[in-house]
Image (cartoon, rainbow, N blue to C red):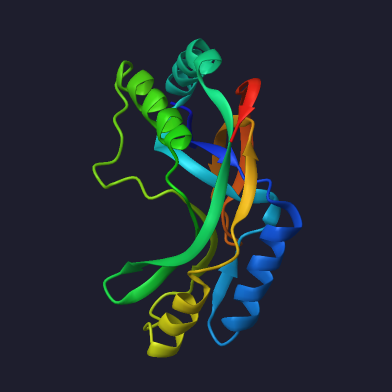
Length: 194
């Protein structure tokens, strides 16, 4: 049976401000082995499905299509940096996204719709973020790394427009994941809400 590794996400369109923030991270963290994500591939994941069948992909497309008019376009704010760890090793470097009411409404609407077809959200709390890099294995997080991240936690906020949700296929390769849009769902932009 044919399958795809898939997820739903909001593309990040922060432009030069996001690029500048990532370049600052690259400069500050040049001593670490980090695989950086292309700025064209940056996104805010709303729901990760993992490996699913083509029939399930079709069911997800139909489900999101039925609710998309209830999902309002909005702006979101990137306002911090952080790291996800595996044991004591840093794994994922990210830009943090403010938990606005509009973002949570989109997330909840999608979660409820997907639950109706048998997909349930991760039990972990939703931490809105945009992955910008992945650390090579077995790098201990020294004080210098923690201090660098803490210094950038109070970064200048970056405002981004959320105008669509995309169902992506994630294609794994030795050079990292490649993201291919399966379907783009335009959000209702009757009034782009701040």
